[in-house]
Structure formats: C-alpha cells, structure tokens
Image (tube, rainbow, N blue to C red; front, side, top):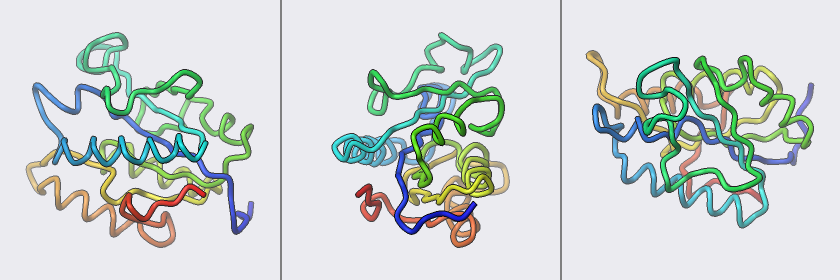
Length: 179
C-alpha cells in the first residue's frame, strides 16, 4: 500500500523496562537514553501525537509480568489512555493487535525508540516497513548491551547504518518532528 507524503504519526516506545537498567546489566548510556526518550515522549504528547508502548514479557525471570524488572522505566511510563502491548517475542507485531490498533487510528508514520537495538528495535523497524508504515528510527533513542564480539556503541551505530534508507529514516531525537 503506498504511503501518503504527509502521514499520521505515532510514537512507538519499545521495552523501556526496569530490567534494562540494572541491577544485573545496565544498557549503554542509560542516563542519556532516558533523558532523550523522556524529552521525545513529552514532545509527542504536547503535539497530541498518539503514543504506543510495548513491554517485553517472559514466563519467569526479569521480565515476568508483575515483576520489578517488567515495569516501565518511570521516566517514560505510559499515561492513562496510552495503549500498552505485551509481547512474548522480538516483534512488537507478532501475536499482538498493534498493527490493527495503529490502522484503526489511521497511523501510517511510526517513530520508533527503545531497547534492544539488535533485537526488538531492528525487528520493529523491519516489520513496520514491511507492513507499509513510514518508519523513523531515533538514532540516539535506542540502546543495547555489549556483546562478546561488539561494544554496545558499535551495535547501535551498525543498526543506525543498516536500517537507514530503505527500512527507516534514521534521525537524532532533536530532528524528529511530529507536526
């Protein structure tokens, strides 16, 4: 389906949960990330742009529903009326009604931010683009952890590069416009 030149935007925040901020592991540059995401969220709300939250779930452990790690980070918690989707896979669209709820609201332009760059963020961008959404990835609005092979900074930079172009427009938060 072709995307009109001026779409209806929404902000999609993925897996910004307490478990990503310790105590076992702490994502790359957590303070800068939460400040960026909180500012982006405030701008979206002030512009009356719909905000959709996604929360990762696992049967047990840090992301077990109701656990402390499963809770949203307080700086970007959902407000009343903002839909929350609970996912049990890397894709925010798999076995959720996210796509249907976006389409009900006429959303065709998604700004995506959150955690983890190489898993749920990458997947959300690719699936959203495949479903016909115009996608903006917030370049400084996603993070991850060091791996044995690459530092978190390298993983983030890699995903900003490989997703830029056909899959998503990649922009720093300061350049994201909701109007």
